Length: 441
Image (cartoon, rainbow, N blue to C red; front, side):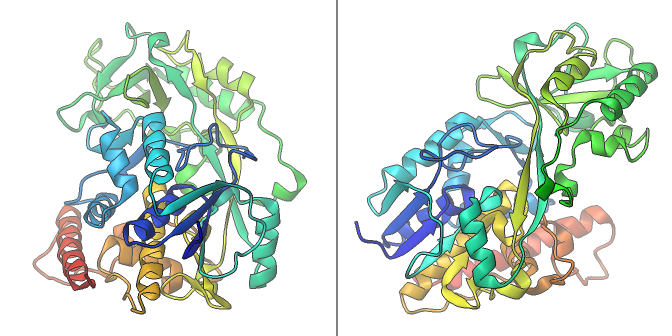
């Protein structure tokens, strides 16, 4: 099959971009190297595989920026959101998925679409003609070198860490109990493992003393991204840091004591069957033997069996505010668009959203039209603006979508944090509806 656009990378961004173009009637060649060459983090050759958490985070479109982005993508026929909704697992107000069912659904939809040719191959340079580079944080070295050569910029980089996954049957529910996240909400979707002060302090010391993954020489100066900070790095910032972060006990009454524990470890369902649960916020670079030893000191996890232990991988991104225009085109080579984490957005849904926009920008251009960017008051528009010009290029860092990227709500009647969030969300919904209504048929 000849193609109109060549997409390199079958992650969330590349899959979403391919879907948007194919649904618009354009022929796509989607190149994915997994199947002929693996990566340090992926376990399968499925498209859009989730390598870290199984959560797309909050699905609340009335007061949360991530939920706003979810709603906008659903309104724009997002494949990623459709498959996530189909394979949802209980997680309170968050959107968490059965990772295997979800990625299998994305792969099936792409592989069977008549306008998409899915090719298992490694691409080492820019394709000829219209293309989207969506190779993500684990771009193969030859392509990464080609990007640096073509842009004249040195790629920035940071580390992403993976949380361990536990088999539910190995959790001691005589010690642990079910509750909502910090007891907020009516559902009880999280397993809670309590710690007293001595247990907590010993655990923190174990994190600090445990043997860590050694860095390669080329990784030595790579910083961590705060949104995926290894738990032992958080612990090094002070003995009480974890109690005010992923191990926060505030509001969680242990039904066996009627009191808050000194600290708590929470697990969230990771698959539809409820057999796998990930330890929330426990991304780590501890060596595997250290993880098993230390995590089994957590009350309730004394006999824990692990379906996956934590890990670490290097993430890369470009200086998008310098290199890309407002429609994600490479200024020095406008036949190339970038999408996904490579552009400096952080998070599953953010990556997919930028892929969606890249696909729609190309579809409009191929029709001889100009698609204006979504308004900056929307989730997509705010994220796109951050990537392509809203951030200082020299200090540019990956960013999750958040209301801090949106223009302020300048209404003196809107007072208080909760009301401002609701006002942001309402304004975004109205602006997105207007933008979608203005799109060419």
